[in-house]
Length: 533
Image 1 (spheres, rainbow, N blue to C red):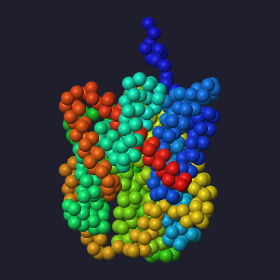
Image 2: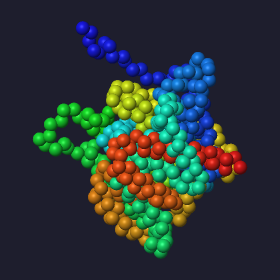
Image 3: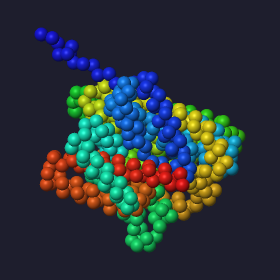
Image 4: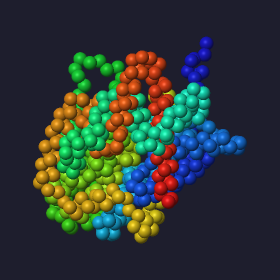
């Protein structure tokens, strides 16, 4: 009788460096980087290009040429969508925005050091995500909604049938809703995310939308959302640290450490310590290169290096948590908070320019690659084959690194021409105006005061619901009508589950994927048309 193991076929995941796959990764990376830079410079937005990458691979696979048939593999399509998405967000949010800050500040001699610091931060950022994804801090089974949408789109393209019909219907409704300015991605996320976290996110969005009639004041101008995020963020970091570094309860028998995850607690501990060490060294390097050592006292210099590295890792974790639960990541808002705190600590303008150029580079690529890894996780069978899952994730990470390298090259080549045409991301201008305006004791008092309820709400929800972070995210994102979309989606979801039970889940997931995909396609198309005009 043959051993069962001899009958089992070993699954081999496609490699990012296979010639045909590698060439398409390079091409889509260049396209993604150009799109990202163009749109962030002209419109101040960065569209999700994951589904565009998947569609490119699907279309190419339809050509009756033997070498192109390999793109029918959902796993190769996953590598292609990972590359274009990584290049888009990497070039726009993690590189071009930081590089533009010293230009707007009038410190053109800091542009190249800013590019170096941002590039290193980008690589560390995604290294951290690769090591933390599918751990007890960032579980693969959590929402990561855009990743679900891309995976379902790829499945629908392969399988057709009812799944494709539901996805297509959702896609059409997503485009139509977006045409009438209804946030269909928010509506779709409500069908698949954590109901408690999303309900708090929706409340935050509604409070932001109706702040004037409700409170007769501008909450953002009073730095209330920022204060809430500071309090909630501090508690969230403590909760994450407890998950990672806390001791297990006594008298609990553990068969296999963290067996439900592909990353153990010990691995996460090492990754966080290593990641912070890399941020610390990078902060020290750019501080020396930019001459901060000669501009500040030794004590202030050491404090700056420590604060910049801490702010970088805080930024990526808070942005990652928000992205995981809501599908949005308030990268700009969280970076602005770390900037305001830096101002209050008394750092000079030059140091603040260097710091925000460095810390703003972390977070966006972390969140975006989380979506891509979620797509791959679903396509590979939701972690049932851990060896295959880890190998696939490794290949996605390699595809991302190739994309980031191309993004760095393209930003390095193009920023001269863009700045000469005064094409600068609006976000970079906000950072600079904040540095020049400084911060008052009133702002510090407001943020400290509102940090208390933010911390309490986060404590009540615990690490599995992230209520405080999600409330603050809703207040900071402040997308019109998104709150109504989220709460309506949750209501429909609850009613559907009450009536049809478990049968409703796959239908809602497919429709939600269509809503999010349609919204992303409309956002991408309309942004490109506006940019061309």
